[in-house]
Length: 482
Image 1 (cartoon, rainbow, N blue to C red):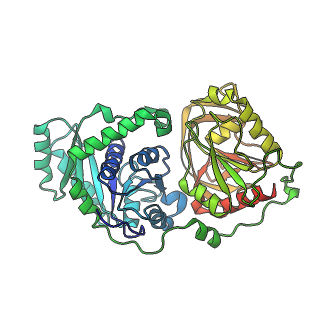
Image 2: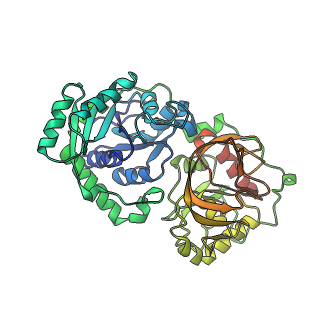
Image 3: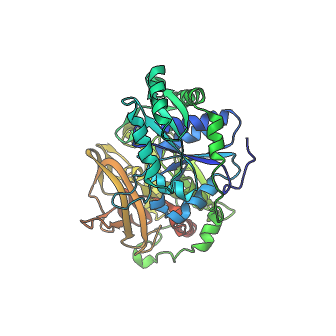
């Protein structure tokens, strides 16, 4: 075990694959858990906007899973955000996204695992689904090794190997490539994680089953991989230049623009509801939705809110009938409210409380699942009724990165603010935008979407506030003045 570092020099590996479905999550999560069991402090990371895999990573390591997304945050923030998450750790494991060289559509290597590996100066371990090949595996691995000389593929893990004879054929073929085989995993049903319409089922929904799945992944990786070789490869990563990201410093370097004026429709309507409105120490309480229905959030959001002076408190809309005491503002991120629509609807007391808070002009920021929860109804079941809109499940998957511009002033951003975001849903909200939309999307049809009403900002777009820290300060300042 190495000594814990500042994050810039922490040993690290990127777990990648030729394509989706090759076994990256099994290997990455299993490796994190296996190393943790051996006493390593493991820093877990995920390339791209995915919220679900980091939940499994957190379960495996006991640390917050953090995303590294060069599209949402910019390439310049990948290494600082990594170093921030890896502070005090012995080793970091980064799970890739899609195939090694796949990134944002039409943007070259942008947001690909390969780009992140280069930005982190990290060696790559290629996980290959070998279930339907033998000698051809050498040609596949050779192609990935030689495609981009700046990406260092330091090892291969063969997944879904059928037998000892199959393993022997694969190893013989790979001898000519010059990349060591660092693991061989047999097919194992117990490590399969259940999926549904948007991918894996989140950890928060699986509880004990998720723990068993992670334990099975750890056992498979521990038994089939050379952990010592993987740790040695991780230690070959070069040190990173520059300082680790810090929420407080990010806010200082990105001061917020002025809050919207009352003439723009953000005037206070009376005082805050009884029992709400902040704490005696002057730190406004920001209630952040959590629990099984709202599992999608970036760890940096809460850190930025806290650095801006808020006291961040989590609440569960499935169980809590009241908002946290002193709530001045609410943040409702992504998740699967459509799966829990009946339970969310049944919690009428909390729905009413959120509607009252919004009606009095308090700031409410909602993304995707949060947008659905604020609607009048979801699949025919009553929701908060903050927005005069109806939401329902759809057969069509909406997925992809978006370039967005704020159409008007809101509690998050002034008009004209440009941000990048990500859409990922199988639901439809009708109408798709209010009279004051949240965002204009730079798509071919130049569509607008979302709602800005009073202190409410609700949209399908997931954004990463580390790319625009002033968003958090602006939100907290509005909490103080509501």
